[in-house]
Amino acid sequence: MDSLITAAARALAAGDPLGALKRIALREDPPALALRGIAMAQLGDFPRAKALMRSAARAFGPKESVARARCIVAEAEIALASRDLGWPAKTLETARITLEQHGDRLNAAHARYLAVRRQLLIGQLDTAERTLSHLDAASLPPPLSVVHELVIAGIAIRRLQTQTARDALARAEHYSKLAAIPALAAEVESAQLVLHAPAARLIRQGGVRLLTLADVESLFASKALVVDACRYAVRDARAIVPLAKRPVLFSLARTLAEAWPEDAPRETLIAQAFRGKHADESYRARLRVEVGRLRRALKQIANIVATQRGFRLAPRRATDIAVLARPVEEEHASILAFLADGESWSSSALALALGASQRTVQRALDSLAAAGRVQSFGAGRALRWMTPPIPGFATALLLPTSLPSDSE
Image 1 (tube, one colour):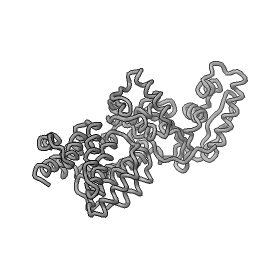
Image 2 (cartoon, rainbow, N blue to C red; image 1 turned 90 degrees about the vertical axis):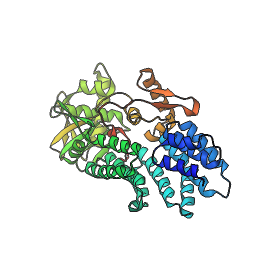
Image 3 (tube, rainbow, N blue to C red; image 1 turned 180 degrees about the horizontal axis):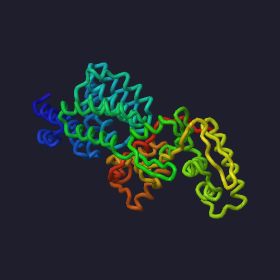
Image 4 (tube, rainbow, N blue to C red; image 1 turned 135 degrees about the vertical axis):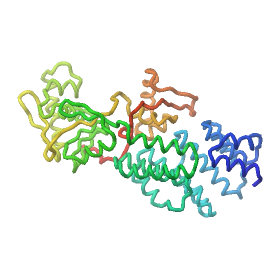
């Protein structure tokens, strides 16, 4: 490897893409193409970076398997940065095995971290933890140690384990100072802000106040029955009943919880659950059916008692009832939560992360774009969507995580 390539690689490792390009911008040999691709990725030009990396991989000969594997890993990193989550995980795993077999353990570890960060983005927390368990964190250089701790913090934040997240972010901050890469330091700082920003609203007996993630964790561990409007579930300290696939039942549960300790009138329940303007006999009959279904769904944690004017929620173990609502309640909030990371997303990546169809996501994006909430750039398969972050709010409770399946 010549001196210019070596100098450019060192500049990229230090987070100086312009310094790298000064040395290799006019070169077309495979190593220079690969380094130019990384430089363009660091500058945010992901389509050009991807094209350069593919050109480098093709230019390396069949005997240069390690170099080609490194290009595949770099292309996967570009895909992750551009939120193109549909890239083949098997290809990255094959490249990782090749690197390990040839003794390039550092880049092999980097490939594993790319896989685990993708798993974290789409809510596969258990899989991400299993992938982490195969890595020896003690032998990592500072930049990868930062990534390791950020992944631990990300999993902990999704699971509302705030002390674990806080400890991981403190270690990440320490390693980021050793790495001396501004982009990593900024990522750590951004993650730390999430722990202190309002994450949800607590609605209890007519009062409303904002909660941080630590407050939400304490609420879930308390003796309260919580109707969780962030992840569409009803829970107490010992059990959880997911209702994300049963919106009518969840609407009834939330209305009953907001009325507690009083009962909720039938007219109010019908208006909230069915959008009915008049509580005629057909609506009343439908309400009786849906309340019966909700009563069966919640039988482990609460009962629903009929009253003269409506129904009242009666917890079995809990001593209090509260509603946990989104900090800002609006349509398509889950899509906005992903876009709030400041990165550009494709509609296919959003569909994969949300577990929804691409058609549904595209309709939502078109609606948000018409309202001026999101904007797109690029065309065709390179079309990306983005929006500025929601000021001052954490969105971790709107991102996907593992919950028990809905009961039918």
